[in-house]
Amino acid sequence: MGRFGWTLISTVTVVLVASALFFFNLFDLNPLALFGGDDSNATEADDMSEETAQQVEEVRETVGEENQDLGQFVSDTHDFYNETTGYGGISSLDWDRQREEANLILNTLEDKLPEVEDNVLQADLERIRELANGVINEKESGHVRTLHRMFHDLDIAMNDYNTYDKIWNAT
Image (cartoon, rainbow, N blue to C red; front, side, top):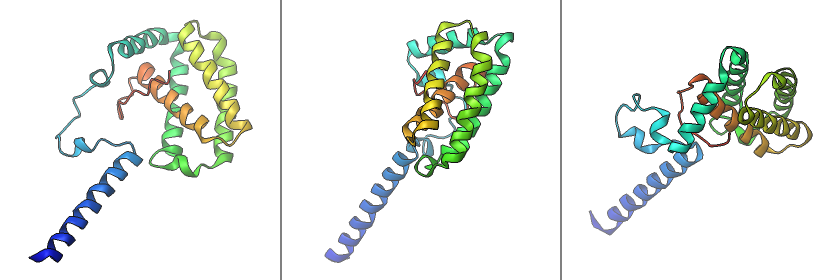
């Protein structure tokens, strides 16, 4: 197999490893999940700090019967952001669709925010309102990314969302 063969094998190996690392970083995936077997029994508490777990519990306690429709709103909006920004979609946003969703968020918060009694949840919803206004007034993908992360974290806290259990600590 000579020098040419080893050079070719080394080059192909380096390119494959670099491509895999780039892919997993681009889509924020866990490459160890491919080799670690079934990870379906893991909960989000396994990956979060004690402080974060406590914050999630505090938000869960605020949901109650009176905020169930707010939990549904969070879930629906999180689904929208998963659809429009997931798997690299953040780099090619449909701004008309994003502004339309931001307007829907603002209208919903106008109705729901006065009913929320928990200060922490209220602060998160105020931050969401600021970001939604930012989406309407600016073409800044950072606002959309942060909105997605906030709705993701709230969905975990309020609705036990567990399809993807990374906590962004955005809320």
